[in-house]
Length: 418
Ligand SMILES: [Zn+2]
Image (cartoon, rainbow, N blue to C red; front, top):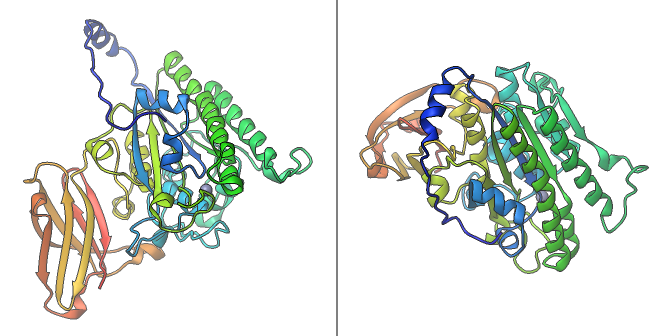
């Protein structure tokens, strides 16, 4: 990756616009389709210091941003910078305090926070979805395919589990078998997207993380990043093929699940800057000011996907998301709520017109976590430019546990801390 986010495009209006407008009246609207890719364990600086022509091309067509994982490093949403934890933060749009995946053993995911696959299938049970993955647990445990807790959500086409086939892929200490599986998975993803074009696809590639663990900052890791980049290029080619030959509009998002340790680039799991430092690359030309000027998080990807797909999502689910869309307007970020004695103090950062109206709501329960419903009541209204709201509670038993801030464009939530 050889550039930063300060890219500007000049849109050239051509006189073909008028022609397009005339023909559009007789054509159906393009179908919206999504593919997202997680390429494992590549810290921001590692990506920037490696030649990645395919990701560069993707970013030139759309955009690149630095990003982060790990939740609020000093707060209640602090989330380990561990692989499955990061994948699930992408899939659910919430941090580990909600989705409850704390490690790669994925002991007890809280499926009350639905994944993008569940949200999609709840609305479009007949539209096809796919996963192409070097790790089986992504489908069976994180998506929870076929489980009663996920209402038996299914992924229509699953190309995964090869890491368990030790006859076809004997496990070698240099992890060459993972390199081969990544190639198999990406090649199939490219072919399948080209021919079958699922509405929603997840591609997961692992080899870069293995080289990170084995060698840390090293030529081997650099080579692995280049290798993954070439595989990502195949998938982008398929997306472009679909857009050129079919009436389809594609969103492609590529990210990583965590950075790596500062001292040697091998480990991860902690809250150091380098372990938290990730990135997002997309083909979208519609990225917002939040994408361009702030540092988004992995949890912002899910709201971006649902927005692009125009997917209806229940208000109660949406109200739990820790992320916001990277393509819709975003009015607020950095929300906090603190209760000291009877004093409730709510703060945020405004990103748009400071006169934007903000409605503040609170709930005294957190029943969503256990599958229930929370009742929100209005605390008051203010303007986004105020960036704080203070109130004195009359009785301690009125203490809210969750706060919502709503503007015309944005809903953000925060848990109250004492
Ligand atoms: Zn990982």
